[in-house]
Image (tube, rainbow, N blue to C red):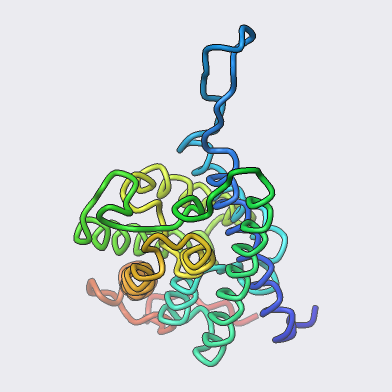
Length: 265
């Protein structure tokens, strides 16, 4: 089987990031909260999917697209994941700029399509209603900048560890996308109230400029914090789990001890 071409890899990242932003942010914009009238036309009740539904939507976008194109590009769909993969030795550094550019383009295209669809509803105001990330008064529950930075770094770092572990050659085959998607679901369940959950600069960029309401001015946080988390996760996984025997007193990977049995047939 031939290796995927550079164009195929970049296209996979663009389409995958588009799907992640469209599916995840779209669920928050269109379906998270819906008000309907009861049969008597007086009382109202909510029929939206809520935080749980949005968290599942983000996880499902990763699961579905990872199975679709993971064998082509590695299914990063996230600049922080790409950075961690490069740091962890899973991708060449020279591919990183192209991945980042296509991920951001995919996110922005998804944000544009979401904006066009949303504006089709009479009375819809995009400002503050495009599932943007934020801190302070732009946080869903008014969490501070410090809280948001800590959460984004920590959750992105653990996300990278899950991604690298689930795609390790020693891991069970075929289950990587499920582990990664479920991890992203869990991350959203924890942090939607904190920052609306980024852990992905392309996701944040994709909707920030359509959302307005302070989101573009706060976008730097949702680049800096996830990239730091990606860097940490990309360093920790190989350090602790790939070279652990060497670090804790064993021999370096790839070397032989005199007690090793080598098949010479």
